Image (cartoon, rainbow, N blue to C red; front, side, top):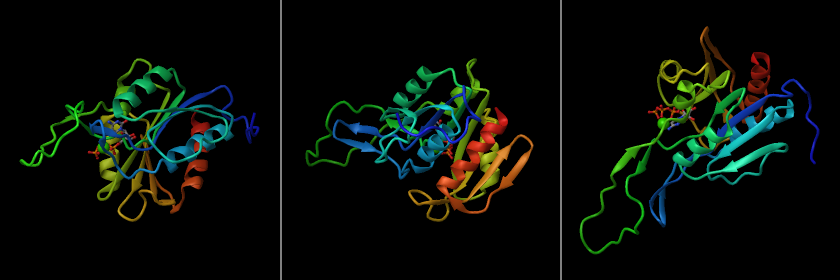
Length: 218
Ligand code: CTP
Ligand code: CA
């Protein structure tokens, strides 16, 4: 059911997309989160499906409809996202757009009570890096694309992430303005051979252009 794809450039290809924030429980009623809306990742999943790809979208908690033709798996935490990504392999390409929480709370199984004493201290432990995990995996997708939201030294930081995580491309997102949760994006596409800076455009247009580039590469 639903719309026929606009083209078959990605027919027969399986592409994995992560999107949205993750929620990390502090206790059974509270959580740590971030400002990711999921819009850019959902737009990319939709654009890839319109080129005929089979798309698996692993999404953190967001308030967005599933794009037509996309198979969506909902998760809450970074660990659940890592498991869902591993279970969705193999994939021809993976586009990791999610704003994965870097840390989770070590112990979150009992509600923290006020009890009149000092404010609680949260012991944090680092979450698995899902992009780096795919970069090092024997089942690494042929094309591995990461995102990097940066406020300063955007290209420098993103270039370092590309190498460190063994990604093919990093889409570096300049979030010094109003990008988080907003509608437009100012991005640089960092590849092995150099950096392309795209003019500021809306997230749907970033998604369309990126999907075409992925089709060129596969
Ligand atoms: N990423 C991931 N798993 C994590 C953290 C990040 O898969 N636990 C992915 C993101 O989806 C993104 C890329 O890695 O594609 C870069 O995320 P970013 O938060 O910019 O990088 P970090 O290595 O977490 O560095 P920073 O200290 O700047 O947050
Ligand atoms: Ca991070």
